[in-house]
Length: 203
Image (cartoon, rainbow, N blue to C red; front, side, top):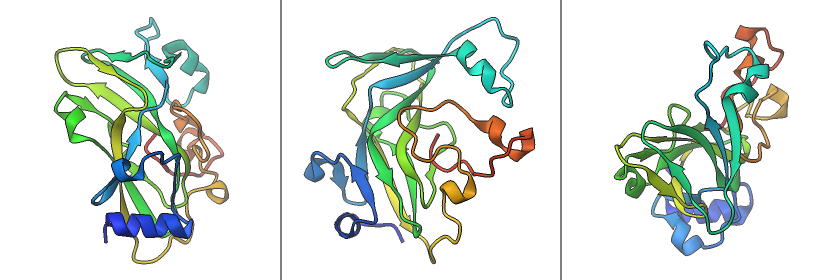
């Protein structure tokens, strides 16, 4: 069952579903979703001379990613073909009986801006800001302004609460993240890491 605006408000009032800061509920809470705003931090993927990215080597991250902070009143220009990691301004806490999906707002989709490549799921138990995988599929640069409502969360109620929700007990890699986070796939068991968490949020 997908939560309606009334359901979302009830769960927020109960305190088990958190989206904060929610500065304008009348504007941000849609009929069956919550609009999330763009934060000020971005991780940009640079064209470098490294032969390839090795997912199991976290030491390489600084070689192909640079961090950008957009000051108040400024914009981030997303060029055609670019892929950057952004973040939501809001921090969320998802209870163990809900699953959230991150989707882009249609107004940005009509500008050829997408907000996630594959990671659109926010697991039960996740807490933190949400990393956005921003791409410009169009032919013209698009100016992104922090504080703009760029994405939305849709909540689905599980048939029963998760027995092992996302979090510390699972060794989840992105729990309590603040700002955009680069891939930590090197911590997965497949790459010899000691962390057992799943993808967790949309990063």
